[in-house]
Length: 265
Figure 1: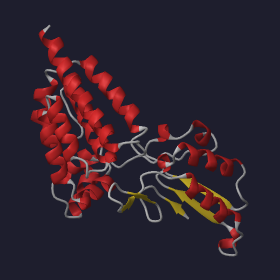
Figure 2 (figure 1 turned 90 degrees about the vertical axis):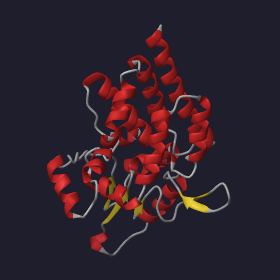
Figure 3 (figure 1 turned 180 degrees about the vertical axis):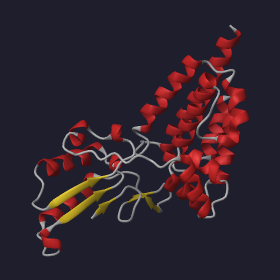
Figure 4 (figure 1 turned 135 degrees about the vertical axis):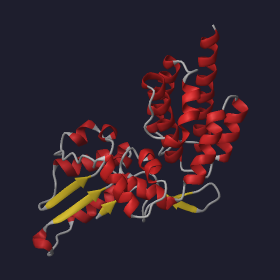
């Protein structure tokens, strides 16, 4: 059995009543899993494997419910939890699992593989994916390039609360996880350019990032990055997605404004 956030069998009601993919693994899904592992099986010698991916998509209630199964697993049952951010798992979950780190491939090998798949702008996509070729391939297949470009074009010019609110309104159809990823990687590149003269994620925005980074206060940017880290822990279930996004973009504007103020002080 595979439990996935944003997968089949798990939906939420959209603002207009339409169904949309869920972005978290819920306690109800874990309870269904408990029923599954309690059943005996005559296949595979009585063995069963439970795959939970991505494991960090479990909300706190689901994680606590899973903890009971990890502490007293059914005979012949193996749990595989896959995550690319182990820091978002409960320490009690981590302590009951064996870790198997899987290092990524080299950038040259990953780039060559993407080019073999016929991916255009493979280098730019690989950078956006943090060097992960499968993620880069997924980005190419989702077709989010135009949406990303519109967002970053406006983010690079963002300067007033009104423009922040306008961008938030225009980004309503974009998944919050995607917007948070764009903001986080954008700010990482700003800090990297400010401190080391290099960038990692948005290679196609190098000049815009360089121009903005020269005027930014490191202290203000660090404060905003802390806000983004805190937001990343709750974007899967915000009470009001629009207000959540507006807060992030308004705070970004405040970061820019505070930086310019300190620069001229």
